[in-house]
Length: 115
Length: 106
Image 1 (cartoon, each protein chain N blue to C red):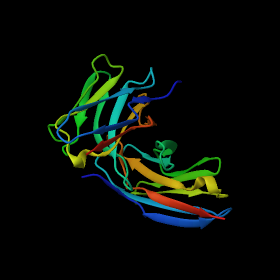
Image 2: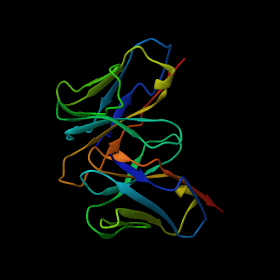
Image 3: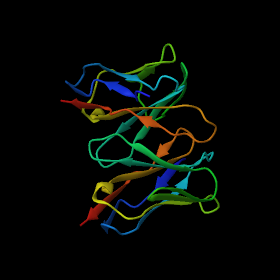
């Protein structure tokens, strides 16, 4: 169990630029989640995949956000035309589907700062 | 909609017992989980309740009452290292509460 890894750890970008984050889940986990977290708040659900299928996307997520998991392994989250309000910690989590007991394993996150 | 409510902050002394409550409204109940997050760190799983009752894991216990849409996390023999944020989470897609910041004083 090598854990969930995310890259980069930190990203500073200028408003209007595009950014892409990568998540490598635990290898045998078939579910992968993306969350966004701001200071003093809980993780906010963005989207999740079961294998390569994106099964749900938050209605709060604008069209500037897109996520992929092309081979059911790693995933990427892209934000186009970044805005200052996008500044947050972006967390990836994975889990193995074990009935109703969903234990999420989180990566250390990517801290995005939009200037 | 789905929401989980928990107190924003709790303070307790080292060695004491503290209870963090969580009330929820979720469509499609899939159990209630608890996560711990230290400043600058990632959330880590603590416990999960699918059925009513108490689950015990070392110094931490978690309780669920589905009829009351209510659960709590009980931390015993508090240590300074328990100072962190604690989140209840549940529902489809694992929705998180806003978190309870626990301060443990010497």
